[in-house]
Image 1 (cartoon, rainbow, N blue to C red):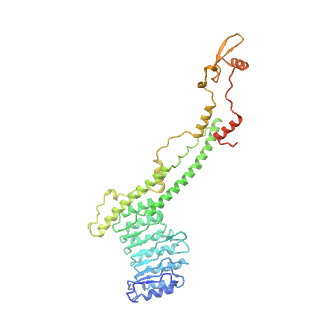
Image 2: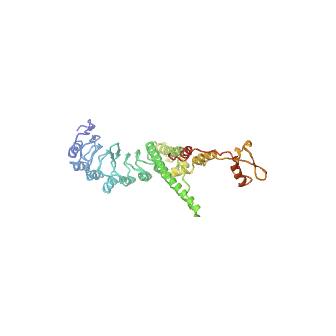
Length: 436
């Protein structure tokens, strides 16, 4: 094949493994000598003849660039066979096996085979093992990928690693951080869309402080947005639990009052304060500020590394301040929530609106001293013609029950306010929500 034909595009051509292997060998003049050619065989069917592809890779009969995206492996053994062949390959410099679909998460043997590729291959310079998280399909290696990444610690030839949509999470971020602290070959790492929270991002930045070769690392703004969304969901769940607890405490409080009347002491737990919109805003503010702080530190380290790479800092010191080099405390999602809720402005204890409503209604029905009318003061003559004055506006009669009885018999007491029966039910409904 002429070197003028730089790219052979054979995507979605329903090729099997044997046919792909024939193309790979046809693009090779001398086994073991890579040609600057590209073979694109994405979305083909490798099930039949996958062993032929593995043999061609092992025999170093491949172009320098192989792109095989979206390959569906019905058996995990087939994918592992390709990985084992890559351990000793000397001709593939750029490999894209992203969005590989396995029947289930990669097993221990497959992940260990990938670890050995990282640790033993000395030719690969650009590797894409990203997954996919589409609306109807999710393709990723699984949690075992974290173990496989440890093989990169001693790798010195791989320059570009793309590992997006693999759901690395906090554990994967910690693994990448351990790689950054020892690896001296990687230049660009693309690890967005991996559900890495602030704690994981901070761990990565702290590790970058000790790495002097990485030139590009993402700010992972999408991961920040996902982290904020997860925090909101967590706060709502905590609020639901708090509401349930508060209702239980209210029941316990009622029971406690009954027990107190019976001489038994029962002290209910204090209800937790409700999460307010201000708390949500506070969480967003704290997360944004902390994330921005780590981005700023990351830029300092990346700028230092680029200066070193460009020969502008021959001493390799970078003139980075001690403040930036000092590791930042990695704040977890729970830590953010506790930080915000513990620093929330105290809420004033407002009166119970039901109690206030009932109290106002009872005041309307109470005869008080202010209701006294001088004109309604009566004079009563007893058998001794002694004159006594009684204030009808008071709740008790100053001169005793005998005077009150005589006033009733004389018919001189004004009638107290009366409430029609229908009105009483209306008040019950208004105050206590009872149905008529």
